[in-house]
Length: 564
Image (cartoon, rainbow, N blue to C red; front, side, top):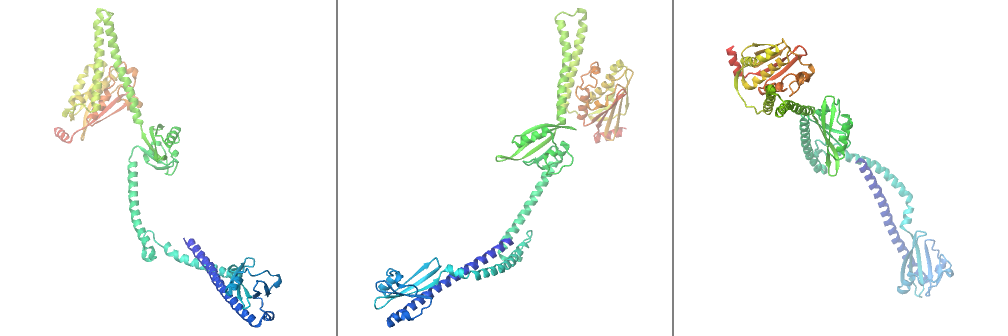
């Protein structure tokens, strides 16, 4: 701004000076022309009067100098006398403007400009009594010639004025701009500045308040957006068309396994795999794209969508979700479908084969009872399997009837062991029950199934001559049921999967042991039904311990404390 004011002042000064010189010269030139014309008229009248009185001798005797030219023309237009040229060499002047006017009206004037000498000639003619004409001519410099004559002094004046203008412009421009530069834009006050700036400063103050409010709202929105994105389990990345990250939440860094990362870096700094790159490039091309990334600790689903503005992509939005559990559940679902199909097909195939042999008369009458027993055994196995699936489905869907009765667990465990007495004797397993009488509120049927399956597994997967012990105890507000055996145990790598449906640690051994493969799944869901927990500890070849913890309602717990 200072520079503009500085140049403006200098330009105005120079243009004003040039205009003044031109106008003054023009005025002086015009005035000089008027004076020269008046002098020529006066000289013409004086010379004409003298010639009238003294005749032509006056012209011969008088020295007119070099300022004026006197010409005497007779009534025919021929030159009789001329102070500058030989009269005989001059052409007839009867067609000259001033001569014609003099012949007609007694006096005539004219002027002619010569571009060669840049001078204007002023002529004035007066008719004498004898009809001849005296013409006096005088020269006058043109405006251009006048300007050229004063060129040197004009340049000197111009240089002086330019130097003065530079100093003055520098001081004035700084003086003008200083109050403007000193305006506090955050707190503008009109009193300390030019009155002309008052509307601007008032508007600026209003705008400051408005901008401040908008900035506060923007900051609040950013904080809310950051809070929401940081609370997301899913990863969120927003990038510009050059794939420079504009915002990125911590979940995205965690899911992609990225270390330190700063906004403003390329999105490829988070993951540079070919699958990820193709997904992002497809989104930049305007197409929504999905891909699966495999990282060290699981699988991630990446969804990249273009952010369109009219007819161009102005960025991309990337969502990242952890689908490790989903994929595992899908794998388990496929395994479950395969296992349940196998478990249902095995007894059905046996039943169909025996029935087919009976239908075709391929079984001797003495063997019918044996084959019928096989059909009954396989049917019983099939019914048990279906019953277990139905029970598990009800627990899964939470459609099992909600019972809320008081169950004394010690007596329930004793009842379960009595039901399994024959099985334990056949296996040669010694069972024992210890602990104290503790009651909980819940479903007797479901808790009976939980204890039955734990004890049944403890017998089936035990060794001949082994033992199975059940202990019922309690701590404040919780009941603890421990079922431990001295059986074959479970390898550590399989402990996390024993509660899956149809999962068998040793399929070759499990195929020789009766069971549906759903027992521990029913245990897990039955315990969850009662808001409890179940855990397993095992050592291969030494046995397994299942620990079930169930909550006791405060009222019930106090009553039990009174009993004990």
